[in-house]
Image (tube, rainbow, N blue to C red; front, side, top):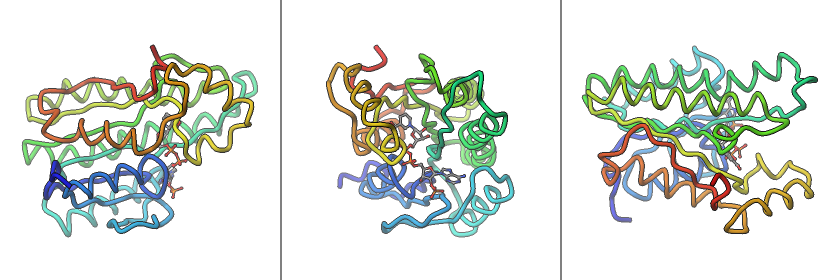
Length: 236
Ligand code: NDP
């Protein structure tokens, strides 16, 4: 531990597993007080607040619970996300809505709630978990790609709007990372995906967490509005 986030209050959504859990643990390792928001409890030693990020009142209660204990929030990582893949012509409206609600609307609601505090503090950092799919699109993932592209628009707009108050807003675009989200893909799809990766292997959640740590620490104090690919070269 080198204390890159010493005493920082960090909120990470989707911290029960996968990339979010790796980020929460990495931030904790650097001295942060980490609050993980998810529906299931992580099997890890972080503060956990039960929260359904598709439910506005659940988000409000979670942020309220944190601010009752802490008088500030330094970092928000909008990481929670879902997929409901399917061919566009057959995509159900509820699958479109579910993905846009979980992936994009949640980031709007959380960022709005937390940026109110950050504006008062005159400092803060928001990190949105986008995807290479948000940059390049993907057949069978129109809803997911739209949500992840939307996060990039949100990131850049917030970066412009909040930078005068010393609030930085960035995004990460992971490629193919081995988590429960990608474990459900058929073996053949995973093999094909690997062939599109110049580094010739999937990424690990811990590798995304390193990029998140950099962007949320003072090492990135002069970086805002960027989308950092963590994808083994997939999105080149
Ligand atoms: P996982 O499916 O492993 O984890 C998803 C996390 O999101 C869980 O902690 C889950 O918690 C949380 N979550 C989902 N829905 C809700 C909800 N309604 N309320 C609260 N929490 C919710 O996914 P990954 O770790 O792979 O993905 C993390 C992020 O990275 C996602 O945004 C994903 O789109 C993005 N990403 C992942 C890639 C990959 O290859 N894995 C590639 C590019 C982007 P719980 O179920 O306990 O509520």
